[in-house]
Amino acid sequence: MLAKVGVPVRFLAKRKNRSDKAPAGDEASLNPNAGCGVAVPAGDDTIILAKDIVKSFGTNIAVDGLSLSIKRGEVYGFLGPNGAGKTTTVNILTTADLPDSAELYIDGVDALSNRVAARSDIGIVQQQNSLEKEISVRENIVHHGLMQNMSRKQIEARMEVLCERMQLTGRLDSLVRDLSGGWKRRVAIVCSLIHNPKILFLDEPATGLDTQSRNLLYSMVKAINAEGTTIFFTTHYIYEAEDLCHRIGIINEGKLVAEGTPDELQSMVPPSALVVTFEDGREEVSYHANHEAAQRAALEMEGATSIAVRQSNLEDVFLELTGRSL
Image (tube, rainbow, N blue to C red; front, side, top):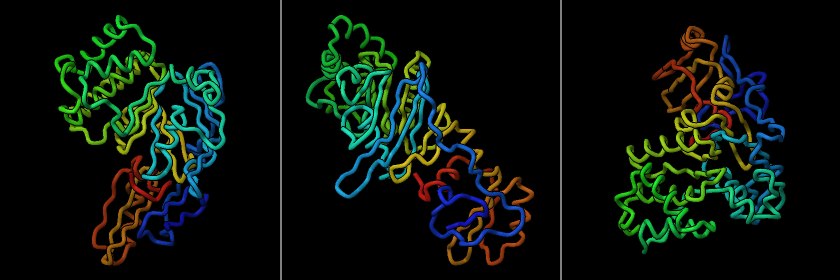
């Protein structure tokens, strides 16, 4: 563990092969006051309000007292290592699963006591494809619309707009089983948006997509959000969160360990990173106020096989908070 003077324990990195002592000199420490995850007060601009979510599976606590306040019209990114509790949290927020204890409000509706009303405001694209594979794209979309009590006329009008945007019009009569993973994801997105929900949950939607499909997904996320839809976005790709999200929450071991805008989270580590690799394979990363300070610290390193000075980034923050990569 890389110990940093003056840094609270909850912000210490747990990355493997880091030194147990901080380099002397002008190394800067993590800023414990940035991105501390203080809940946004509820108000007219709050569309998702979750308080003290707890969910266990046997002896494993998947979500441990997590609270979130999502603003109307924002894109909120939710990052965390594998097993951190991201998908469990999404399942609870979408009422697909019940917590052991929590308070949950979707646009002012108590979602735990009125799940049907809450679900009418929600669309979700899950990690695992839930489409009916033996019927056509059109039939899947119509089915989802009917499940939301839409008329066939409403479904046809909405489907035309969404399929044109997702370049699906020419594949409406294709069987889902004959589509690639990228095309199936596009169909799932249209199905989730057919009833024009106020909130769209995207649970790692870019996983397994090719570059073209991923870029189309990003464009659609931005277009949907520009129309006023709130988006809750879990991802394994940090650059997605930086580019798409107004705010980002980082979850680790079931707890929200940081929250803020990308710039606010980035301010948790100083701007210059010194990366040193030693002969025995150890890697040490320290953060400094500027490149000159990092270079001075590099001159004091002994037994290094490589030394690099670079700009710190959001992935550094993530690693310092969780000790694990995405």
